Length: 447
Image (cartoon, rainbow, N blue to C red; front, side, top):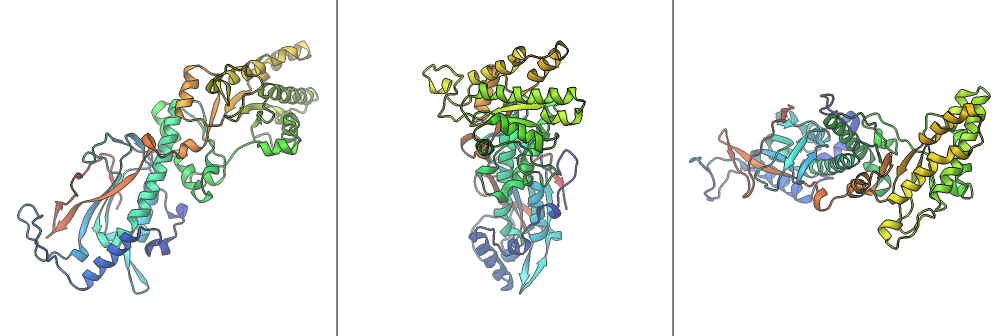
Protein backbone atom coordinates (compact mmCIF):
# COMPACT_ATOMS: atom_id res chain seq x y z
CA UNK A 1 0.00 0.00 0.00
CA UNK A 2 2.87 2.41 0.75
CA UNK A 3 6.31 2.83 2.24
CA UNK A 4 4.78 1.60 5.48
CA UNK A 5 4.26 -1.98 4.32
CA UNK A 6 6.32 -2.13 1.10
CA UNK A 7 3.30 -3.21 -0.93
CA UNK A 8 1.43 -1.57 -3.78
CA UNK A 9 -2.30 -1.37 -4.35
CA UNK A 10 -3.60 -2.91 -7.56
CA UNK A 11 -6.59 -2.40 -9.81
CA UNK A 12 -8.52 -4.82 -7.62
CA UNK A 13 -8.77 -1.79 -5.34
CA UNK A 14 -9.07 1.02 -7.90
CA UNK A 15 -11.48 -0.59 -10.38
CA UNK A 16 -10.39 1.64 -13.24
CA UNK A 17 -12.67 2.40 -16.16
CA UNK A 18 -10.09 0.66 -18.37
CA UNK A 19 -11.95 0.56 -21.67
CA UNK A 20 -12.71 4.26 -21.79
CA UNK A 21 -9.33 5.24 -20.36
CA UNK A 22 -7.63 3.34 -23.19
CA UNK A 23 -9.67 5.36 -25.69
CA UNK A 24 -8.77 8.72 -24.14
CA UNK A 25 -12.10 9.45 -22.46
CA UNK A 26 -10.30 10.98 -19.47
CA UNK A 27 -7.47 12.64 -21.45
CA UNK A 28 -7.05 16.20 -22.61
CA UNK A 29 -7.94 16.16 -26.30
CA UNK A 30 -4.55 17.33 -27.46
CA UNK A 31 -3.03 14.09 -26.20
CA UNK A 32 -5.50 12.16 -28.32
CA UNK A 33 -4.55 14.33 -31.30
CA UNK A 34 -0.86 13.66 -30.71
CA UNK A 35 -1.58 9.96 -30.39
CA UNK A 36 -3.46 9.92 -33.69
CA UNK A 37 -0.71 11.85 -35.44
CA UNK A 38 2.13 9.63 -34.24
CA UNK A 39 0.17 6.45 -34.99
CA UNK A 40 -0.53 7.64 -38.56
CA UNK A 41 3.10 8.62 -39.09
CA UNK A 42 4.20 5.20 -37.93
CA UNK A 43 1.91 3.55 -40.47
CA UNK A 44 3.32 5.79 -43.18
CA UNK A 45 6.88 4.81 -42.20
CA UNK A 46 7.66 8.47 -41.78
CA UNK A 47 11.17 9.48 -40.72
CA UNK A 48 12.17 12.87 -39.38
CA UNK A 49 12.65 15.20 -42.35
CA UNK A 50 13.25 18.58 -40.72
CA UNK A 51 16.57 20.37 -40.56
CA UNK A 52 16.47 21.82 -37.05
CA UNK A 53 19.99 21.42 -35.58
CA UNK A 54 18.97 20.05 -32.22
CA UNK A 55 20.80 16.76 -31.85
CA UNK A 56 23.95 16.86 -29.68
CA UNK A 57 27.13 14.82 -29.94
CA UNK A 58 26.99 14.68 -33.70
CA UNK A 59 24.03 12.28 -33.73
CA UNK A 60 22.58 12.01 -37.21
CA UNK A 61 18.95 13.14 -37.62
CA UNK A 62 18.46 10.63 -40.41
CA UNK A 63 16.28 7.51 -40.16
CA UNK A 64 14.50 8.60 -37.00
CA UNK A 65 11.02 7.05 -36.93
CA UNK A 66 9.16 9.82 -35.08
CA UNK A 67 5.92 7.84 -34.98
CA UNK A 68 7.62 5.19 -32.88
CA UNK A 69 9.86 7.51 -30.88
CA UNK A 70 10.82 6.21 -27.45
CA UNK A 71 11.00 8.73 -24.65
CA UNK A 72 11.83 9.07 -21.00
CA UNK A 73 9.13 10.96 -19.10
CA UNK A 74 9.22 12.12 -15.48
CA UNK A 75 6.35 13.14 -13.19
CA UNK A 76 7.00 15.70 -10.44
CA UNK A 77 5.24 18.25 -8.23
CA UNK A 78 5.94 21.94 -7.92
CA UNK A 79 4.47 22.44 -4.46
CA UNK A 80 6.92 24.50 -2.48
CA UNK A 81 8.62 22.78 0.43
CA UNK A 82 7.84 19.18 1.30
CA UNK A 83 5.08 17.14 -0.33
CA UNK A 84 3.66 13.88 0.97
CA UNK A 85 3.31 11.87 -2.23
CA UNK A 86 0.12 9.87 -2.86
CA UNK A 87 -1.42 8.64 -6.10
CA UNK A 88 1.56 6.68 -7.36
CA UNK A 89 -0.02 3.23 -7.11
CA UNK A 90 -3.11 4.28 -9.04
CA UNK A 91 -0.95 5.95 -11.68
CA UNK A 92 1.03 2.75 -12.07
CA UNK A 93 -2.15 0.74 -12.57
CA UNK A 94 -3.21 3.17 -15.30
CA UNK A 95 0.09 2.53 -17.03
CA UNK A 96 -0.15 -1.22 -16.47
CA UNK A 97 -3.67 -1.62 -17.87
CA UNK A 98 -3.95 1.16 -20.44
CA UNK A 99 -0.58 1.33 -22.21
CA UNK A 100 -0.86 0.21 -25.82
CA UNK A 101 -2.87 0.89 -28.97
CA UNK A 102 -5.97 -0.22 -30.82
CA UNK A 103 -5.71 -2.40 -33.90
CA UNK A 104 -9.24 -1.96 -35.15
CA UNK A 105 -11.40 -2.82 -32.15
CA UNK A 106 -8.68 -4.92 -30.50
CA UNK A 107 -6.45 -3.34 -27.87
CA UNK A 108 -2.81 -4.39 -28.07
CA UNK A 109 -1.28 -4.19 -24.59
CA UNK A 110 2.33 -2.99 -24.71
CA UNK A 111 2.76 -2.16 -21.03
CA UNK A 112 5.41 -4.85 -20.57
CA UNK A 113 7.65 -3.03 -23.03
CA UNK A 114 7.86 -0.04 -20.68
CA UNK A 115 10.61 0.54 -18.14
CA UNK A 116 9.03 2.05 -15.04
CA UNK A 117 10.51 3.52 -11.86
CA UNK A 118 8.42 4.95 -9.04
CA UNK A 119 8.50 5.94 -5.39
CA UNK A 120 6.05 4.48 -2.90
CA UNK A 121 2.95 6.30 -1.72
CA UNK A 122 3.91 8.07 1.49
CA UNK A 123 7.30 9.21 0.24
CA UNK A 124 8.42 12.80 0.73
CA UNK A 125 9.76 15.05 -2.03
CA UNK A 126 11.13 18.58 -1.78
CA UNK A 127 10.87 21.47 -4.21
CA UNK A 128 12.46 24.89 -3.72
CA UNK A 129 11.11 26.68 -6.79
CA UNK A 130 13.68 25.69 -9.44
CA UNK A 131 12.06 23.42 -12.10
CA UNK A 132 15.51 22.24 -13.16
CA UNK A 133 16.01 20.74 -9.70
CA UNK A 134 13.08 18.42 -9.10
CA UNK A 135 12.56 14.99 -7.56
CA UNK A 136 10.51 12.77 -9.88
CA UNK A 137 7.99 10.41 -8.32
CA UNK A 138 7.57 8.33 -11.51
CA UNK A 139 9.85 7.78 -14.50
CA UNK A 140 8.84 5.86 -17.62
CA UNK A 141 10.76 4.83 -20.70
CA UNK A 142 8.90 3.53 -23.70
CA UNK A 143 7.21 4.33 -26.99
CA UNK A 144 5.51 7.62 -26.36
CA UNK A 145 2.34 7.07 -28.35
CA UNK A 146 1.54 3.98 -26.29
CA UNK A 147 1.08 5.96 -23.07
CA UNK A 148 0.56 9.55 -24.23
CA UNK A 149 -3.15 9.41 -23.33
CA UNK A 150 -2.33 8.65 -19.70
CA UNK A 151 -0.64 11.93 -18.87
CA UNK A 152 -3.88 13.66 -17.87
CA UNK A 153 -5.34 11.00 -15.51
CA UNK A 154 -1.99 10.18 -13.89
CA UNK A 155 -1.28 13.85 -13.20
CA UNK A 156 -4.81 14.25 -11.87
CA UNK A 157 -4.62 11.52 -9.24
CA UNK A 158 -1.10 12.55 -8.17
CA UNK A 159 -2.07 16.21 -7.85
CA UNK A 160 -5.25 15.73 -5.87
CA UNK A 161 -4.07 12.91 -3.61
CA UNK A 162 -0.73 14.54 -2.81
CA UNK A 163 -2.47 17.85 -2.11
CA UNK A 164 -4.94 16.28 0.31
CA UNK A 165 -2.21 14.24 1.99
CA UNK A 166 0.13 17.20 2.40
CA UNK A 167 -2.65 19.44 3.70
CA UNK A 168 -3.54 16.73 6.22
CA UNK A 169 0.09 16.28 7.24
CA UNK A 170 0.58 20.01 7.82
CA UNK A 171 -2.66 20.11 9.83
CA UNK A 172 -1.43 17.27 12.03
CA UNK A 173 1.85 19.10 12.61
CA UNK A 174 -0.07 22.23 13.60
CA UNK A 175 -2.20 20.22 16.06
CA UNK A 176 0.92 18.97 17.84
CA UNK A 177 -0.14 15.37 17.66
CA UNK A 178 -3.77 15.81 18.64
CA UNK A 179 -6.24 13.79 16.52
CA UNK A 180 -7.60 15.39 13.37
CA UNK A 181 -10.99 14.22 12.12
CA UNK A 182 -11.25 14.08 8.32
CA UNK A 183 -14.46 16.01 7.59
CA UNK A 184 -14.31 17.26 3.96
CA UNK A 185 -16.65 14.73 2.31
CA UNK A 186 -19.47 17.25 1.93
CA UNK A 187 -17.27 19.67 0.00
CA UNK A 188 -16.83 17.63 -3.17
CA UNK A 189 -18.54 14.98 -5.28
CA UNK A 190 -18.85 11.56 -3.68
CA UNK A 191 -16.76 9.81 -6.34
CA UNK A 192 -13.54 11.19 -4.86
CA UNK A 193 -14.08 9.96 -1.30
CA UNK A 194 -12.11 6.71 -1.55
CA UNK A 195 -9.01 8.41 -2.98
CA UNK A 196 -9.24 11.29 -0.51
CA UNK A 197 -9.65 9.01 2.49
CA UNK A 198 -6.66 6.98 1.35
CA UNK A 199 -4.59 10.16 1.07
CA UNK A 200 -5.63 11.12 4.60
CA UNK A 201 -4.59 7.73 5.96
CA UNK A 202 -1.20 7.84 4.20
CA UNK A 203 -0.58 11.32 5.64
CA UNK A 204 -1.49 10.06 9.09
CA UNK A 205 0.89 7.10 8.81
CA UNK A 206 3.61 9.41 7.57
CA UNK A 207 3.06 11.78 10.50
CA UNK A 208 3.15 8.90 12.97
CA UNK A 209 6.41 7.67 11.45
CA UNK A 210 8.08 11.08 11.45
CA UNK A 211 6.92 12.12 14.93
CA UNK A 212 6.86 8.79 16.80
CA UNK A 213 3.10 9.01 17.31
CA UNK A 214 0.33 6.44 17.24
CA UNK A 215 -2.64 8.53 16.17
CA UNK A 216 -5.64 6.65 14.84
CA UNK A 217 -7.55 7.45 11.67
CA UNK A 218 -10.94 9.16 11.89
CA UNK A 219 -12.91 9.40 8.65
CA UNK A 220 -16.57 10.30 8.34
CA UNK A 221 -17.71 7.96 5.53
CA UNK A 222 -17.19 4.29 4.80
CA UNK A 223 -16.09 5.19 1.27
CA UNK A 224 -13.14 7.13 2.66
CA UNK A 225 -11.85 3.93 4.23
CA UNK A 226 -12.47 1.70 1.22
CA UNK A 227 -8.90 1.45 -0.08
CA UNK A 228 -7.25 0.78 3.30
CA UNK A 229 -9.86 -1.05 5.35
CA UNK A 230 -11.13 1.88 7.40
CA UNK A 231 -14.71 2.71 8.29
CA UNK A 232 -16.60 5.92 8.80
CA UNK A 233 -17.48 7.15 12.27
CA UNK A 234 -19.62 9.87 13.77
CA UNK A 235 -22.39 10.62 16.19
CA UNK A 236 -25.18 13.19 15.79
CA UNK A 237 -25.89 16.06 13.40
CA UNK A 238 -27.80 19.29 13.95
CA UNK A 239 -30.70 17.73 12.07
CA UNK A 240 -30.98 15.02 14.72
CA UNK A 241 -31.24 17.64 17.46
CA UNK A 242 -33.90 19.45 15.48
CA UNK A 243 -35.81 16.17 15.36
CA UNK A 244 -35.82 16.27 19.16
CA UNK A 245 -37.16 19.85 19.11
CA UNK A 246 -33.76 21.34 19.95
CA UNK A 247 -33.31 19.17 23.05
CA UNK A 248 -29.66 18.14 22.73
CA UNK A 249 -29.67 16.16 25.98
CA UNK A 250 -32.68 14.05 24.96
CA UNK A 251 -31.18 13.45 21.51
CA UNK A 252 -27.99 12.13 23.13
CA UNK A 253 -29.90 9.99 25.63
CA UNK A 254 -31.79 8.26 22.85
CA UNK A 255 -28.67 7.97 20.72
CA UNK A 256 -26.97 6.26 23.66
CA UNK A 257 -29.98 4.01 24.21
CA UNK A 258 -30.13 2.81 20.60
CA UNK A 259 -26.56 2.76 19.26
CA UNK A 260 -23.87 0.26 20.36
CA UNK A 261 -21.35 1.37 22.96
CA UNK A 262 -18.43 1.10 20.52
CA UNK A 263 -19.62 4.32 18.84
CA UNK A 264 -18.19 7.27 20.81
CA UNK A 265 -20.84 9.52 22.32
CA UNK A 266 -19.92 13.01 21.10
CA UNK A 267 -22.60 15.59 21.72
CA UNK A 268 -22.97 18.47 19.27
CA UNK A 269 -23.71 21.30 21.69
CA UNK A 270 -24.06 24.53 19.69
CA UNK A 271 -27.62 24.02 18.37
CA UNK A 272 -29.09 26.58 20.77
CA UNK A 273 -25.98 28.78 20.76
CA UNK A 274 -25.51 28.04 24.46
CA UNK A 275 -22.71 25.48 24.42
CA UNK A 276 -21.96 25.48 28.16
CA UNK A 277 -25.58 24.97 29.17
CA UNK A 278 -26.22 22.22 26.64
CA UNK A 279 -22.92 20.50 27.47
CA UNK A 280 -23.95 20.40 31.13
CA UNK A 281 -27.48 19.22 30.37
CA UNK A 282 -26.06 16.33 28.35
CA UNK A 283 -23.46 15.58 31.00
CA UNK A 284 -26.01 15.58 33.85
CA UNK A 285 -28.48 13.32 32.03
CA UNK A 286 -25.92 10.80 30.82
CA UNK A 287 -24.07 10.55 34.13
CA UNK A 288 -27.32 10.02 36.03
CA UNK A 289 -28.23 7.12 33.75
CA UNK A 290 -24.69 5.76 33.88
CA UNK A 291 -24.71 5.77 37.68
CA UNK A 292 -28.18 4.21 37.83
CA UNK A 293 -27.14 1.30 35.61
CA UNK A 294 -23.82 0.79 37.38
CA UNK A 295 -25.55 0.66 40.79
CA UNK A 296 -28.03 -1.88 39.40
CA UNK A 297 -25.19 -4.09 38.15
CA UNK A 298 -25.81 -3.48 34.44
CA UNK A 299 -22.23 -2.55 33.70
CA UNK A 300 -22.31 -3.36 29.98
CA UNK A 301 -25.42 -1.27 29.43
CA UNK A 302 -23.91 1.53 31.50
CA UNK A 303 -21.03 1.82 29.00
CA UNK A 304 -23.54 3.18 26.49
CA UNK A 305 -23.95 6.27 28.68
CA UNK A 306 -20.32 7.31 28.89
CA UNK A 307 -20.00 10.73 27.32
CA UNK A 308 -16.85 10.65 25.18
CA UNK A 309 -16.89 14.28 24.18
CA UNK A 310 -18.70 17.44 23.18
CA UNK A 311 -18.27 19.14 19.81
CA UNK A 312 -18.29 22.91 19.43
CA UNK A 313 -19.39 24.06 15.98
CA UNK A 314 -20.65 27.61 16.57
CA UNK A 315 -21.19 29.55 13.35
CA UNK A 316 -18.62 32.21 12.57
CA UNK A 317 -21.43 34.76 12.48
CA UNK A 318 -22.64 34.04 16.04
CA UNK A 319 -21.39 34.78 19.55
CA UNK A 320 -22.12 31.97 21.99
CA UNK A 321 -24.17 32.98 25.02
CA UNK A 322 -21.29 32.13 27.36
CA UNK A 323 -18.81 34.45 25.59
CA UNK A 324 -18.80 37.99 26.95
CA UNK A 325 -18.55 40.49 24.06
CA UNK A 326 -15.28 42.35 23.54
CA UNK A 327 -16.41 44.05 20.34
CA UNK A 328 -13.92 42.24 18.12
CA UNK A 329 -15.40 39.58 15.79
CA UNK A 330 -12.27 37.42 15.84
CA UNK A 331 -12.45 37.27 19.65
CA UNK A 332 -16.22 37.03 20.02
CA UNK A 333 -17.65 34.95 17.18
CA UNK A 334 -17.59 31.30 16.20
CA UNK A 335 -15.51 28.68 17.97
CA UNK A 336 -12.97 30.85 19.73
CA UNK A 337 -10.54 30.18 22.58
CA UNK A 338 -12.75 31.79 25.23
CA UNK A 339 -15.66 29.53 24.32
CA UNK A 340 -13.51 26.42 24.65
CA UNK A 341 -12.18 27.54 28.05
CA UNK A 342 -15.74 28.21 29.22
CA UNK A 343 -16.92 24.75 28.20
CA UNK A 344 -13.88 23.05 29.75
CA UNK A 345 -14.42 24.82 33.03
CA UNK A 346 -18.08 23.93 33.04
CA UNK A 347 -17.40 20.26 32.36
CA UNK A 348 -14.64 19.98 34.95
CA UNK A 349 -16.67 21.58 37.73
CA UNK A 350 -20.05 19.98 37.01
CA UNK A 351 -19.59 17.09 39.44
CA UNK A 352 -19.28 19.46 42.39
CA UNK A 353 -22.99 20.32 42.21
CA UNK A 354 -24.15 16.72 41.86
CA UNK A 355 -25.86 15.09 44.81
CA UNK A 356 -23.99 11.78 44.80
CA UNK A 357 -22.85 9.51 47.65
CA UNK A 358 -19.32 9.88 48.90
CA UNK A 359 -18.45 6.56 47.27
CA UNK A 360 -19.30 8.10 43.88
CA UNK A 361 -17.38 11.36 44.26
CA UNK A 362 -14.15 10.24 42.60
CA UNK A 363 -15.97 8.47 39.78
CA UNK A 364 -18.13 11.53 39.17
CA UNK A 365 -15.09 13.80 39.01
CA UNK A 366 -13.34 11.43 36.60
CA UNK A 367 -16.46 11.16 34.44
CA UNK A 368 -16.49 14.94 33.98
CA UNK A 369 -12.75 15.42 33.52
CA UNK A 370 -12.53 12.68 30.90
CA UNK A 371 -15.01 14.33 28.52
CA UNK A 372 -13.08 15.54 25.48
CA UNK A 373 -13.65 18.74 23.56
CA UNK A 374 -13.85 18.52 19.78
CA UNK A 375 -13.85 21.72 17.73
CA UNK A 376 -14.98 22.22 14.15
CA UNK A 377 -15.92 25.04 11.79
CA UNK A 378 -13.30 26.83 9.69
CA UNK A 379 -10.23 25.21 11.20
CA UNK A 380 -6.96 25.22 9.28
CA UNK A 381 -3.28 25.03 10.32
CA UNK A 382 -3.08 28.76 11.08
CA UNK A 383 -6.12 28.70 13.36
CA UNK A 384 -4.97 25.47 14.99
CA UNK A 385 -1.51 26.89 15.65
CA UNK A 386 -3.12 29.90 17.31
CA UNK A 387 -5.17 27.64 19.59
CA UNK A 388 -2.11 25.57 20.46
CA UNK A 389 0.01 28.64 21.26
CA UNK A 390 -2.71 29.76 23.65
CA UNK A 391 -2.93 26.26 25.15
CA UNK A 392 -6.65 26.15 24.48
CA UNK A 393 -7.97 22.87 25.97
CA UNK A 394 -8.96 21.27 22.67
CA UNK A 395 -8.58 17.50 22.46
CA UNK A 396 -9.57 16.86 18.84
CA UNK A 397 -9.73 19.06 15.75
CA UNK A 398 -12.28 18.36 13.02
CA UNK A 399 -11.14 19.83 9.71
CA UNK A 400 -13.14 20.04 6.52
CA UNK A 401 -12.79 22.19 3.41
CA UNK A 402 -9.22 23.34 4.14
CA UNK A 403 -7.96 19.85 3.40
CA UNK A 404 -8.96 20.38 -0.25
CA UNK A 405 -7.33 23.82 -0.42
CA UNK A 406 -5.35 24.39 -3.63
CA UNK A 407 -4.13 27.97 -3.60
CA UNK A 408 -0.89 29.77 -2.88
CA UNK A 409 1.15 27.55 -0.55
CA UNK A 410 -1.09 24.51 -0.92
CA UNK A 411 -0.98 24.27 -4.73
CA UNK A 412 0.37 20.82 -5.48
CA UNK A 413 0.19 20.75 -9.28
CA UNK A 414 2.11 17.94 -10.93
CA UNK A 415 3.84 18.11 -14.30
CA UNK A 416 5.03 15.37 -16.66
CA UNK A 417 7.90 16.17 -19.01
CA UNK A 418 9.74 14.26 -21.68
CA UNK A 419 13.40 14.71 -20.75
CA UNK A 420 15.14 12.15 -22.96
CA UNK A 421 14.55 10.52 -26.33
CA UNK A 422 16.09 7.38 -27.74
CA UNK A 423 17.94 7.99 -30.99
CA UNK A 424 19.85 5.25 -32.81
CA UNK A 425 19.88 3.19 -29.62
CA UNK A 426 21.24 6.00 -27.45
CA UNK A 427 19.32 8.00 -24.81
CA UNK A 428 19.95 11.72 -25.26
CA UNK A 429 18.59 14.62 -23.21
CA UNK A 430 15.64 16.34 -24.86
CA UNK A 431 13.91 18.44 -22.18
CA UNK A 432 12.28 21.73 -23.01
CA UNK A 433 14.15 24.88 -22.05
CA UNK A 434 14.03 25.39 -18.28
CA UNK A 435 13.68 21.69 -17.45
CA UNK A 436 16.24 18.96 -16.80
CA UNK A 437 16.43 15.30 -16.00
CA UNK A 438 15.69 14.91 -12.30
CA UNK A 439 16.72 12.28 -9.81
CA UNK A 440 15.22 10.79 -6.68
CA UNK A 441 17.04 8.26 -4.56
CA UNK A 442 13.69 6.73 -3.57
CA UNK A 443 12.78 5.72 -7.13
CA UNK A 444 12.68 1.95 -7.47
CA UNK A 445 12.30 -0.20 -10.57
CA UNK A 446 8.68 -1.39 -10.82
CA UNK A 447 8.84 -3.23 -14.13
